[in-house]
Image 1 (cartoon, one colour):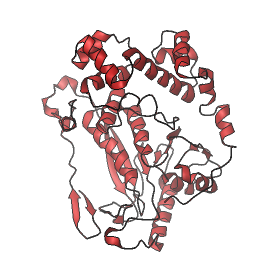
Image 2: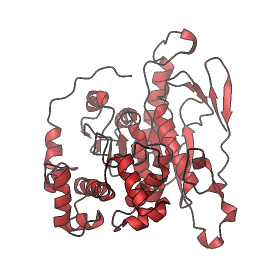
Image 3: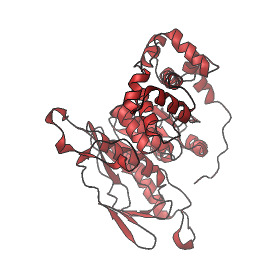
Image 4: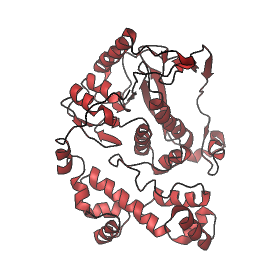
Amino acid sequence: MRALRHESGQQVRFVNPPSKFVGRVKGSAANLEKTVPRDNRSSSTLVETRRIPVYVVVPPRLLLLDIAGPLEVLRQANRVQDAVRFEVVYVGPQSTLQTSIGVRLSGIEPLPKELKEGAWVVLAGDVEHVMQIGGNADRGKSAADAAAEKAIVLWLKSVIRTNHRLISICTGALTLAKAGLLDGYSCTTHYLGYEELREIAPKARILENRLYVVDGERYSSAGITAGIDLMLHLVHQCTDQSCALAVARYLLVYLRRSGSDPQLSPWLEGRNHIHPAVHRAQDAIAADLTKSWNLAALARLAGASDRHLSRLFHEHTGMSIPEYSNRLRVAYAQELLRETRIDMERVAEQSGFNSTRQLRRAWHRLHKTSPREARRAGPGGKAERESLNTTRVRRTNFK
C-alpha cells in the first residue's frame, strides 16, 4: 500500500495488489483499461514469467514527474503481457518526503543493504524550488535534505554491482555521477545540467541534445518526459515491439522516439489523430517493418474496405500508406546505422528493404545526407567525438 500526503495533512492511499488480469482491448481510452482474466486463457498459452526487480530511489524534493511517467510505462507493461513482470519498490533515506508540486509521499522503504541480481535501479531528479500549498514560502534545501542526498550516494557506492542496470531520469544522472558510476560511460541529462554534470564527472562522456543514451548497463535520459521514452525503450528490449506499442498508445505517445533524435521523430509523425482504424493499420506496419503489407491485409486488420482505409489514412496522416511505411523503415534504418555496426546489407534487410539500393532511394527522399553520414553521427563516430569539443552551454539554475 502506498500513500500520498497533501500539505494540508490529508492522506490518500493507493492499494496496488498483484495484477490478476492481462490483455488489452483496442479502442477508446476507456477500453484501454479493459482486461481479460488470466484464468480464462488456455493452459497452452501460459508462459514462464521473467521477474525484474526495480528499485526506484526517491530523493528529497523529488521531481514527481520523473517517476510518475516512467513508472506508468512499467505499470501498463505489466498489464498487457505475461513474459516479464516488473516488480517495483520505492526506496530512499526518508520514509516521507515532499515532492516538487507540494504533495507528500509516504511509505517509502529504507535503502536495502543489498540488491537482487539483475535488478534495475532508477534514479530520479530533484528540485530546489518546491511548490508550496496555501501560499507558504519555500525555504529551499535543508540540512536534512543534504544528508539524505549524501546517504543515497554512499548507498550507491556500496551496493551497485556489474549485474545491476542503472537508469537515471533527468538530473538523477548527477547522483550517479557523485557516486562515480558514470566514469568512462556515455550519458546525458537535462540540457541545463550539462555543465554541472561535467564538473562532477569529468571522466564521463556527456552527449548533448539526446533524449536518452545507452552505454552498457548505464541508461540516462534528458529532462523529465524523456524518461518515458527511455522506459519505453527498456520495455521494448525486455518484451517486444507490440508491447511497447500498446503502452505508448495508452500513454498517447503512440510510438517511442529514438534516443539519438532530439526532435519528434518519424515514429510520431502521422499519429496526431484519434481514428482507431488508422491507428490499427499504423500499429501493424510499425510492429513488423519487414513484412510486405498490402492494402487488403491492412484493411482487414483495420476493419475497413480497401478504398475506405486508403482515404482515411491519407486524411488523418497526410500521407499514403506506402509513404508512411517507408518513413518508418528509413527511421529504423537510421537507428541501426547510429547505434550498431552491422553492415549496410543487414541494415536494409532488418528495416524492411529488399536491397541497399532500395534503402538509399527511400533515404534520399527524406534526407539530404547519405546513410554513411548517419553512421558517422552514431555513438563513437567522428561527429560524436567532435561534439564533445564544442562550445559549452552556460549553466543556469533550472531547478
